[in-house]
Image (tube, rainbow, N blue to C red; front, side, top):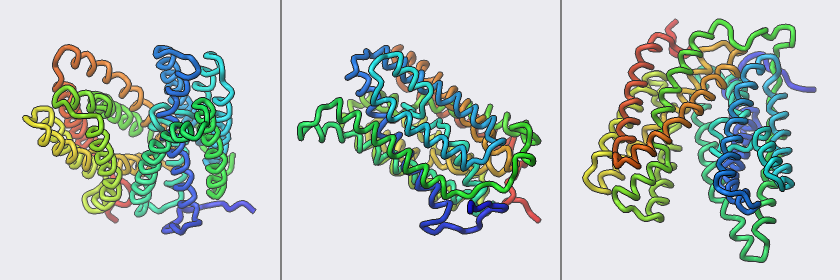
Length: 412
């Protein structure tokens, strides 16, 4: 008999609990996204596609992923999240298998648009609004932010391991396996991860709401709050696009002549610091609140970025950038938790998608502007603009949402 949940699970964090099953599914999914994001351009190149065609395929995949994420948020209130997550896993299986059989450019574009593969390693995904809604339903208000911190930490570490797994085709080539066969094997592994993920998703209880009691619209009383958050988060994402990792690497290469191996080491350490800042953010939010945690960790990180842009030496710049890494991502679990907290449960899938998709679209605009500034010789300006815009975003967030408190912060 299928278990049905009427109220959140307080502290059900055992190894076989629904919450742990959701974490495991997230880890498998991000592990797959981690190696696919690296291997996708290599695979398409071996198929004979040029740089322009590969870029179009990546854009097509991003667009398809964004549209599906938005669509699932708008219709998610009509269905049980567990059912939709299992369906999304089935699509993941089909995507991996289809890529192993896609030999024409048209087929590649079709699978990229309709499938779950994301060249940005999962920042926008059909799974995200569903997982956010399910996780918020499974834990109490008091435990929600800590749960999102673990969720983010697990995803970040799994994606990092997945990126390392992208070396597998080279290792297999050393023992005589053709590069194309090895890459097809990795996409087959991606499909297997979808099967395993569906098993874990099946352990999530069904929602108690019946079809008759589900709301008729995706957003109801929280519509205004969601749209304001989406607009503000888009400003933050647009600012972040000026300092994406590839542009930061370019700046370090051109400004200080940093070697490729040193850059790899730096970004690995930076990623580890960011990942382990998630549980710290959860601890801090219990003391000063979710909005304050987002704002008062973000502003110092932005100041570090601005100062790094003006740093006189490589050592000073790297130190400032590492401090920034330890602070800049603390808003990830707190933002997710806050969005889920200030809307009603039926609105959660829509709120998650509507606040995440515009972020990704906005983030796609600024790297081109940053590249133009680099080309014009203004190499420090993208970093400065990123820092200044993020500080303005933080101040606006604090001003607009300072009185919109999640349930666990409201006084009796």
